[in-house]
Image (cartoon, rainbow, N blue to C red; front, side):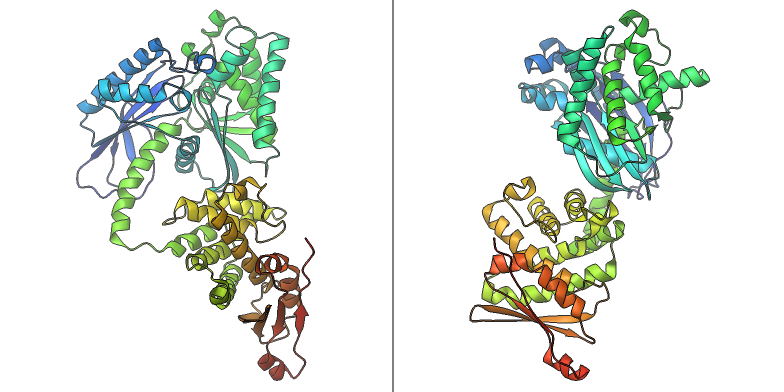
Length: 547
């Protein structure tokens, strides 16, 4: 491995008295990449050594469903070499992760066991979501994404991960079967692509984008791309423009650049393609299919600018290793406040803090008033408050479907201290704070266990009414009480002035409450407030829509 130094990458200062050395290995479908880095006192790191082997571990996998014996042997030889180099640097921690090929192969587990036996490495087979998060973590460290809508894209041999973000907040995270090796083996591209096969390839990519991405929630300002396909297209383009393929980090491409390189290469025989300046000869057979996937995705998203991130998954892996060490010390130093994490995420999404805090307080009062008579579980209160604090985060993406975007943002928000189940419950309650009722045919709701579906309906019903009680966002309703008896529910609100709009909106949003609790609620401005104002108490009879 040739020694090289990359620019430092800012992170929280690492709590260590001596230089900390870490090793990371990315076992991909097409290549295996290893890196040894030294963590600086300020938490940044510099690369001491790196190695890359084109092992083609996934060659033939998508036809046979198995890793071939020859590919496994090539991978084991590469891993032994990388492990020996890391041992020579006396790394404190070595982490190896495997992605699409090992994840999908029927003998993937057997491969992992063989790596442990023959190389002494414990390989983690990470999920597509983890893969995408690592690519995102790298992009966040390398680029300033504040105030920008971005698509972070990582393309490997077997899959393409796409993260749609507004700033650093994740709206959608997708894994698509559009890896360069997979597409090449299925539709061609290793040699010249004629018109008919070229159309088949493009149509296949478009079908995947239509089925799994659909209409994008927004048009990203820029694509930040990592993986060999991006870096090789950038290398070819940079050689054409400047005569050099060095320093590709942050290099700017347009979709037209990708299309130009793609059409130029697809008309060449493989032997000529291998001689193209800026293109790794070992990637010449799969570059056209990979470029086609990038080009079609950029067109689908409506994005023209592409920035190249040479770090990608390995960089994200190193950053996560450093962050885990620092986070472990920080968490031990102070107790975790789960709602503090929720509020921090809401601020990150630029929610109206006055409104959401007020809705959370009113929702908590409604929950307390209903708890005994309706036997509501104790855990429901904090989940309801968290959902209330986050119910408007979707405005970060757009207004029209902000409740749906809230679900995605919360699911990917990395709320600290909550279990996966609790995060999914919070996300669903926020998702149903307006518009459609929860239905089992909705995938996000249908996959919940039956008791959790009941809890989501119940908490969402309460949240809708609480949100209605601050319809004008002026916090006019200062408190709400619950009167329950003889098959009726009555909400009594305190307000310094006539809360006519709030009463109207609470009525409009109470249909789900009526369905869940089986009562026709009334909502009234309290008698004490009426006497202070010298007028009749306002009361709204809530009409529950049939069905």
